Image (cartoon, rainbow, N blue to C red; front, side, top):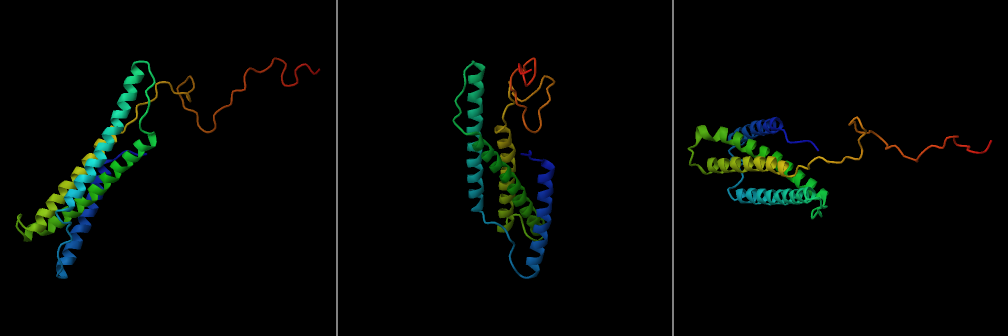
Length: 187
C-alpha cells in the first residue's frame, strides 16, 4: 500500500478547485445557485473523521501492547486482526483524498463568491466550513497513517545471511545430501 503524498493531495485539491470555480461560474450564468454543501454536512464530516481517528487509535494501542509484551519477553495476544489495521489505514487514506476533493471544490466556489458577496453570506460561510472540514479529513488521514504503521520484524525468516530478501518461490530444505548420491549402496 502506498503512502499518502502531500503533492498528490494538493494536485487533487487544485483540480477540484478549478472544476468548482468553472461550475460555479457556469451555474451563476444560468441563474442557478452555488453548488455548496449545507452547513449540516460538517457534522457528518466531523463524525466520520472522529470514527476513523478512534479506529486508528485502537490499532495503535494494539501495536503498543504487543510491542511492550515482546519487550518483556512474552508473546502479546493480538486483539485486532492485521486486516482490520489495513482497513482502518485505507479508510484514513480515502478520507484524506475525499477531504482534498471537498476542500478544493469549495475553495473554487469561494474564489467565485468572495468578490461578489460579503464574507457573511451563507454560501461563503458554508464554503469556509466545508474547506475546514476537508482539511480536517486530510489531517486525520495523515495521523491515521502514522498510527497504523507496523514496526519491522526483529527476526525476519525470509532473509539470507547477506540481508537480501528472497524473490519468488522459497527454497525447500530436504536435509543433508547422502555422500554417495541418490543411488546410495546400489552399486
